[in-house]
Image 1: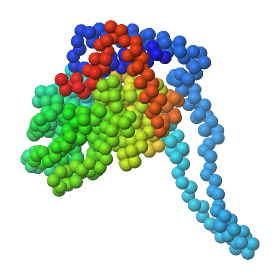
Image 2 (image 1 turned 30 degrees about the vertical axis):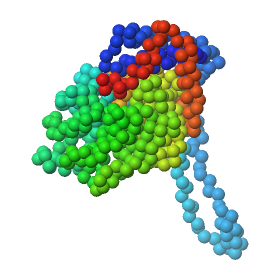
Image 3 (image 1 turned 90 degrees about the horizontal axis):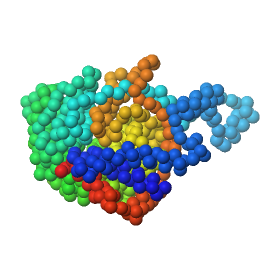
Image 4 (image 1 turned 180 degrees about the vertical axis):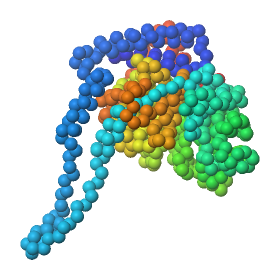
Length: 518
């Protein structure tokens, strides 16, 4: 297992190197060895698996057969009817009525919904889902952030541009050039706040605006109709994340590469608050009603309350360090943390094989299995109604997929993948007027996922499969994963040789975020 872990660590470093803007000659040599390392790793895993473990490998044929068996069983037996168990008082009352000859028709109480039945129904609907994939070509570098408005997709890239795409025709509508550094984040304010600012700027009443943040220390406001930059905020810090706070007159929150959190007035663009929230880059910001969640590359998390009318719009409610969240070791796992909040729970993606689930009110953390081994990488996490979606990239095979979990139970549903799907670094989702799902993913490619509605005979571009090893999802401890990773690091240090001496330096420089800031 020692050599397997070493190879997995090398592949992790190489994958993080490939996301960089530029590579040194030594780094290019390392990247060129990726296929050789993957081949060697596949041989070792095959030797270690042995014939006794081949039944654990989940393939399309096996999944199909299992689904057929499950469907036949459910069809024959049918759902188990709910049995009403009367209370003792009701039994005695019934006996008295029967003995006295007085009987009444007592209506049955409605039985509560069966969560297992709801889960099976949701799982069955996703097992038959079909998607069409379309790649939108136009960016010359990695897509770092995506957003969606109606039939439009907005994408930001390290090539310094923001592009607006018309999804039904898969065409580029606008190329918003103005940033001098890589674009790191996007946010689309609600329509009512756009109308207020549009009125102040004497724009059209129905104008929609989009915000973009960049390593050039600027936040720019663009009109989607014309692509005009109507406002620009200079933050004095490289912007690594932003979100819109829909409280009062509205605020813009920005996170910097140094851990600073700043709040700006929506209408006047004046700075209302600056606070050193984290010790490293703020890589995630999300608002949810009056709450704002911030996450950092150092693995720490903060929860803020938005207060309109006070001297400082944000008040810190809770803060948790990496020793609680389990998202430490930033450089080793790519230096990125992404989050998706739901009520008391925050789902965290930090470049590991699992999704951390933090209850920010109690400080308890559980681990949601997003890959069947520690060779998986989770880059982003998002939610659609009733479903949690986590990206998964396999370091061993180079395959990428989206794993779906039911909410609020966090039970594994299915995995969606495609043979040529690249590593997914960002994700956005919305519903079509007909109720179908439409998603967009970004990384090396910008890809639109469109669900095919009805009984369409056309075969989809996406393979739907189930990995039964993800069924036991929530665990209270991530000690095993941390021990495996620490063991791999120790073995790598003990067995270091001259040609690998630069691996440590590569790992230290492999952060996607730090490279974007150079």
